[in-house]
Image 1 (cartoon, helix red, strand yellow):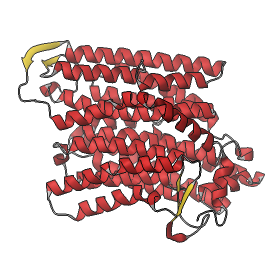
Image 2 (image 1 turned 180 degrees about the horizontal axis):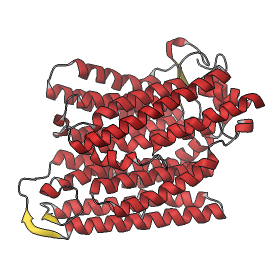
Image 3 (image 1 turned 60 degrees about the horizontal axis):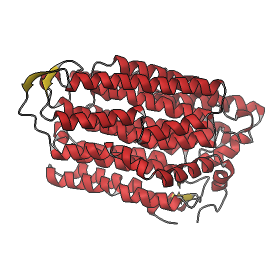
Length: 500
């Protein structure tokens, strides 16, 4: 049994614990945080290479075999999500060490605990431990959202905390019902037990499954549980908002994992339990997010609505229920996560040169670096809107090709293309306000920091990197989608002796 599978959890866990215990040695803490986060990138690439052979890598904690022991499960999807988190986290920590980490206490410890919760959620093969890692992730995110203080952050943070506490209560209720009916919370074993459930148990299992959908929809900001996201993300500090770009993807991941494996096509009477709900709600989320982006009065809020739009797009692809649509969603997930993170950082760079106007989309002073920041904004806008030749175009074309002709195709094409047009209009209006409708005064004290600029450009440049490596990446996500639909492969994990 290889111990590589547990390293994405151990590295941030030990780094976070060490950072909590160390005295106030700023340089040392920054070094530990940067090294621990950057180490996750080559580790994720190595795990992707290991997972690409198509075999499920099962790590039994304490040597206890499934379905009774706690297991970590490495498949193509988990490895891909680890890479998405590692790249985003690396850019965030490099941006934060240029001074944003000084705005509050324990930033780097909280960042590592956040990465611990996110990585654990992607790796766990047990539903209860998914709840545990959710809570670690959420507790760290509560403190990170308040990082830097301010009345607006407190208001947004309180709403965020209360909603997620309610979601956690629902999560526990659903877990209790599933365990009471099936006697297991191992996802692979649960898949087999749900498929074999009799008619008397089916209604309870359906109730638990739909309750889980509510929980994951809250994390993914699916309509009508979306209203917390624009306020929370736009109020957070730039590195925190950028890191939060992966948070909605945790909800999307959980829906993919649970509703393909446990309540998928092999679940008997409970087959495709969530798909009928996901489709209209995802389309509604896309429409509302596009309108919200058009109505946004602050640049961070505009980017937050773009995150919401990407979540709706991803869940619409999942709701189609085919390997082709899921492969398109996974490619688009990488693009939307990294580019949205870069746009949050870029919004902060622009705000730093606008004085008291900051991120407001109103006429303000001329920027010191209008050509550099304007070029970056133009690049990011093209990537977000899905125009060629950047990766957003590839993801959206793949999604449009994946839907069969008919009513679904008409709805998806209309909303996806219409939403992209509205976002392009919103970004164009924002760009003209920020870079053209400016006064004659220049704030000479707002010089660009090269470290922040490098971290921002690195995330935005992933839109080109994904195009350069599109062929092998498409092969990988297509194989991932096929693997996720092979429910029998996952059910074998719960058999005695399944782990070496």
